[in-house]
View (cartoon, rainbow, N blue to C red):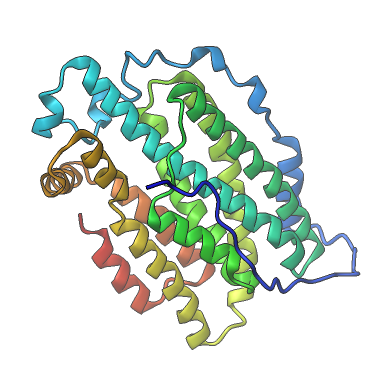
Length: 312
């Protein structure tokens, strides 16, 4: 079956034209100034340091397949090829997430109600374009292909792009997607043996942290004006999509299919691996929970739902 290489969306975007250009010099303005001074170029990354694929992409202690008998039984060259395939699937989902952030931040330029919000959103468009540029080049030069998105990632991106409400777009992009990206990229940074990837992640993480600060600054003011039902609806929106992403095993299902492994046995191994190494999952939820609490989305109901998701 041929995998589609593109999909479309049609949305009724609710935008704002603001005729008040008075400089307010808020924290958002400071973040915009910082963004202008922290621009980096993908072309200046040390592309010559791309790791030979005869070597693994990650340190052994960070390999989630280690200890899985069918993986351990592979000869070294096949084991490295498997690790690179897994790595390519994971980075491909990150790349698709970055394109989602690119699409939504470009929409926010029109839909943000304030001029300073539009200005920062425009800087985020540039940042996200750079991230898409880096990860797509990295994948094509290191593995030779970009894999299709997992179902959960594709669903979140399409939902963000199609929703006409600026605050739902904002919550999905700045709180959910950016929080998860920060935590995941920090884990990849600790694990990677590829110098050019480590170099770029240092810059990308700085960009993502700035986007999250922008999101928490804007949303904490906006969400304070909503009633309890409106707030819970937005909080449920985050957790519902997080549940989809958390339960998405598409990457490892595809890996099992590619290497003719038993899918159930692989899932069992991965669960045991999460139990033995709980820190990455803890970091993932800690970042998101902190940002939700900062903006006022961490209701009592939501905290209970998140507690159940934290379990391996």
